[in-house]
Image (cartoon, rainbow, N blue to C red; front, side, top):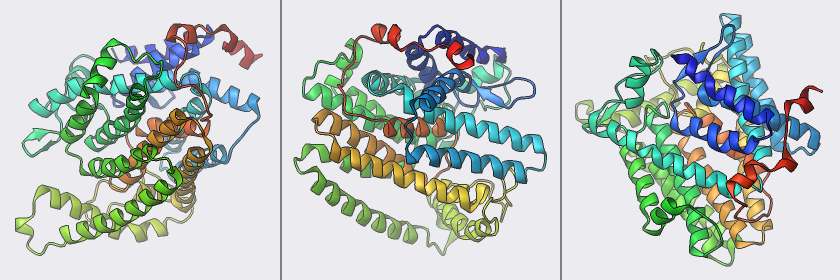
Length: 457
């Protein structure tokens, strides 16, 4: 039955070969990415195991690469992402106990980092801008229903289907419990922290749709979404979903992102950007001081589960920092990281990058973060239309959620694809209309057809 997971890849290939790239992206890849767990895996012999979203992405990634190379216009971020992906592959190949494992890890890095990046870089701006955000928001809203079942029953519908019908061993029927409830949407996005990040980022992207509706632009949200936005149901669902994940990191990050979302309300956006930046730095310092005191516990018999989790992260950062330095420029390899004091997870993606892939990948990752923020700030100053600036600050808020929360969780599940899809999209953002022609007109746009004949010729 797991052979069914290969079907999105075959359909995507057919659509791309027929020139219906936008249909493959909006109606196949995004639903697979946001509605199916990354743990739904199918392995073709002699290749790594991939998810349905991975298979659907492959033809789109080829299109993105072809357009990027033929366009001949490259940016600093292109180089950083390529080098970052290559550094991961190099580290895995050098340090894997079994060479094939290292090669497979390198291939996975290309599929989950580089391909989403070039897809976002080439396939969205400007025509699919509105359609992509609308589809993204709708799909994440749909995740609320199965997530609510997880929160109430402590079991995963996806896990039960995967185990009992598909015969998978990569997903569990149960979900992590906290405060007497299951943690929402953990099975969809591999862990509840990842689900919290996705709900919070979607809240930020949805802010742009709210802005478009508020200024009464000629955009068609669709009857259902228009009704949801009119009565603020979409925002409430996203906030409730975030709360039900019981993940503190994304909640705190969204509070910071909310300040960023207020910047377009002011005429002097540069000044307000500076003010918000100062507030965020002050908030980070105060939050760090609070958690230092929160985890400074002398009587271990009185600590709560939340304190225990926070203490684990503090000790983990202290213990693994010197080990990361010992790993040198290429790290230990993700499968060869030494376990210290029984710590089986590294809940800090920045530290994990340093540990697993070394100083080189760590520096490149920090440069990616910096360049991503820098490009968004520059776009916010360059774009003149209010709708374009509103989109930029929605994107900046979404990425702030990601970069802040990665201090407390690793980038697992679908997060690498979502993150680098947005990073590539941001890199290609240009001033443009908020709305596009009808989705059917876009999908059938014969002037922008792409077939594999042009690649293989």
